[in-house]
Image (cartoon, rainbow, N blue to C red):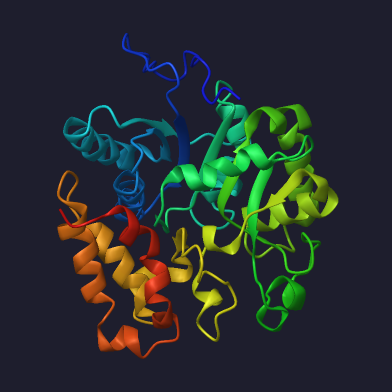
Length: 336
């Protein structure tokens, strides 16, 4: 599968003369509004830090005008340090005519933008969408490789919203249909955009919004759940370690990461910025404090391992997952 077509005039071309014949290119989309600048930059930094195989990463950042300026400045600085590793586009928000305000405020500011990526990114075949409160703890290639596991019907991949029905939200509180027995979480979404366009994705999304907008709580995630309730054959389910959240460990460990480790960690509901489960904050701050271009072992892994020995982490339920949180990092960042 060809991962990236020649861009249309909407997006600048990044074609170079020295094109690597078998270059792997991974497209990562994020939508950032309001106070999400630093969180989004930390997510991008984590993807760059764990880009162990030096694959070409292409970040597509949808944001408000003022935030866009800040993104361009910082990402340009990073690109000057590692020029051949990534490209980026900072793009304006675009919603359906006559209902822009309603979509923009559906849940988190601007989060619903992701529902319209198939039509906004006509020149792209596939991409990985992530929320701003995501941290990569493994190379992007590890989640991207699931695209090759889709059957001929599937066009998206998500993780379950819960593993335990006793603490499930959808099965206890939802007032609308949802996928499977416990629903799916939309914070990490692998998308075959070509197939989504063939399915006429947005022609399904818009009527769902009209019918259920007074009954949904989690905005775009609920719309996605409703759609896959009616079209379950279109969805591939990712292992929980690719969207590891506080609910997986705050009461008891309900996501088995002992073998493969935590691949992508999701600090939803503000867990990256609180001490409710301090493992999440320690991971976020280790990435945030790391400087692009520095030694990952000395300036990321060692500080993180030290932070995870903090008494607050040790006595927390999620703190029991310290080894799993650093499993991939300990393999690829080796003392030199």
